[in-house]
Amino acid sequence: MDQQAKELLIRAVAATIFDHADELTALDQAIGDGDHGINLKRGFEAVLAELPGLAAKPWPDLFKAAGMAMVMKVGGASGPLFGTFFMEFGKAIGAEPDRAAVAAAFAKAIEAVKARGRSEGGQKTLLDVLIPVNTVLADGGDAAAINAEAAAAADRTVPLKAIRGRASFLGERSIGHMDPGARSSSLVIMAAVDALKN
Ligand code: ADP
Ligand code: MG
Ligand code: MG
Image (cartoon, rainbow, N blue to C red):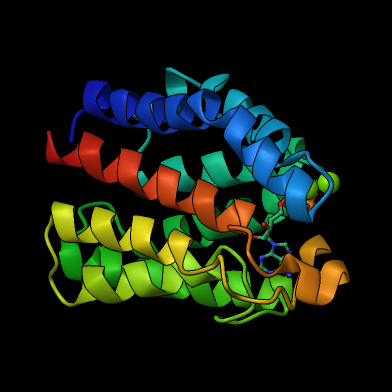
């Protein structure tokens, strides 16, 4: 993929977060502290600030630099978690990845998020989107299947009780709300898949 296509990919992912910042903040107002939209907006603004140089980098360096920008600029839980995901994805992906390499790197990045958050699937976090999406990716699902799973997985966090993060302070009262990080992860995945398939 050339530099221009990489730049379009980065811009598309940032744009979906900017477009949905209010929705993400509203989700976080229900079960957290109401800053998830602001946190991710700040993170992706930091990523955009590194354009165009960022898009000139090979995939590993591009993801490592984007992840680093998010870790450094975002104060909440999501900055280090998204940042860790991107940095570890970059470390594992290789310069000319095929689908198997992307799925393998995605799996390694998930393990790094689990370690960083001391969390696992089923706890009403972004992992509840990342894990099932990676299963579809590894099983060879097409763009439509990956995007459908991302959206469905975010929806499936609604009935879960939060076990990690601020939402866990609410206990049973976290039930009935979509997890903000699951929603934002699904948005990032859907935007990236749409940009890559064009
Ligand atoms: P904060 O909770 O610090 O205000 P954000 O609101 O930006 O940070 O992000 C909250 C999201 O981060 C949650 O919706 C959840 O998906 C994710 N999250 C929080 N803690 C953890 C954790 N320990 N492991 C995995 N994901 C987590
Ligand atoms: Mg928050
Ligand atoms: Mg916060």
